[in-house]
Length: 288
Figure 1 (cartoon, rainbow, N blue to C red):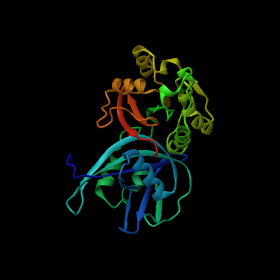
Figure 2: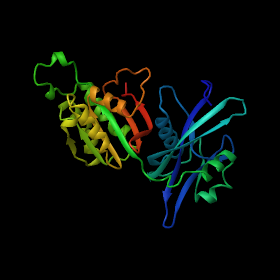
Figure 3: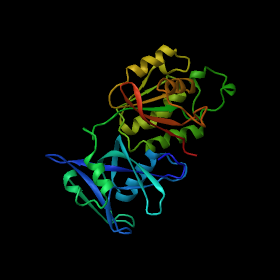
Figure 4: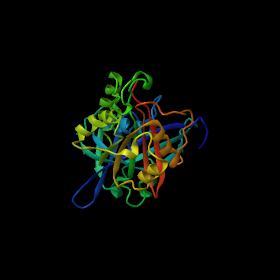
């Protein structure tokens, strides 16, 4: 399905660990009288990963950790319009289900037990064909361009000491909530004040230290950037840097940026890495 007429949606295979195995969540939608995986349509300006997080939260009320991207489901609606649904593995980390207008009941079932409950063959096939170790966490890089820090020409002191503006501090504070669905293992930043201040609220919320690394300073060499990408640790690493370094990293992964020649201040990229390559990536704009 490549047509612009394709309806895009996203959701999650929400799972929890039991003593002996795992269980996945299936949701009953009273409007359709069916049992399905939580999902919903993409809203204007939303990325697929944002849509998936929002829909799962709205339909289940659960707090989840977004893990690896799963295969898409593609099908044709009764209207004849093609539809593509992007899914992520999502581990429940908190919250309680509250019945709502979209979902009135849920069941936690072993994947094999969920098959006869799911209403659609496409969902049953999807569960049966999940990749091996689909619940494992990806090697993830969340790459952040520092938040708004005013104009360089208006700052007369050492540029490394240029701080965030009031708007920049607001953008930094908003990252705390926007990062909620993502586990963060470490936070690394350029030593510039504007970069450190961008991730300090997130670090405080996660009880993590911010490690200042000169290889993320905007005048760092291309070799330093290659070294950072080559030595990317397991788990999820947040890196905050400057436009030249952010764009060099994106180029290093071969990530195209149609319509975005320059990443705005406060923007961020979620990049899942496998064998040194970007397996999945999403560009998120700062809040307006």
